[in-house]
Length: 193
Image (cartoon, rainbow, N blue to C red; front, side, top):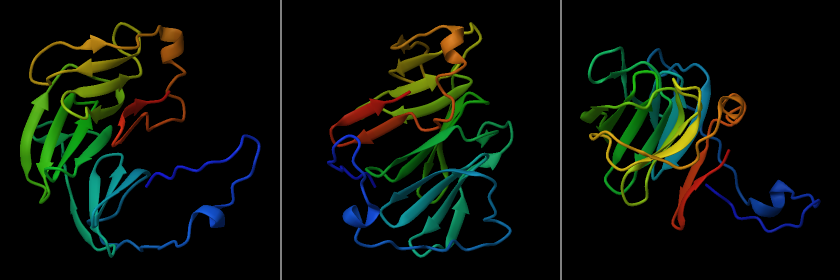
């Protein structure tokens, strides 16, 4: 949840002044639900989606484990790493970007693969689906030693638009410590670096 907090620079903002209630949801622990480092948590309706390095875990509103989305491997519907994921609450799908394997896989809300698309965008740090169509990828560094923010109208066809290319020196530092570069709300899609 994003909070728009109006405050003046150099003023302190106390959490009790902006939050009325906090709910702690203990997550069910089992052999299937054990995770390594957690990189991102997204709550959509009555589900928690949690990104660990090699999978996205789904828990219900009460913390009960439901499933891991991906199968790990190099096969057509398998991933090596979760670079990031996107939950489309309009059509109840979840999309995983695997920057190591250069592919995006779309799952239905039950974890079944709908589509797996191999593409040319490796070594990415983040991605987001455009508000109407297409994708934005933040590629920290590439084979040509440059980094860039790119727009891809269609993953199944070759081609992209370079939005913010930068040289190798900047590519080595721009992604430091910031693993979430995109945000989206009803007003648009935003990129930060």
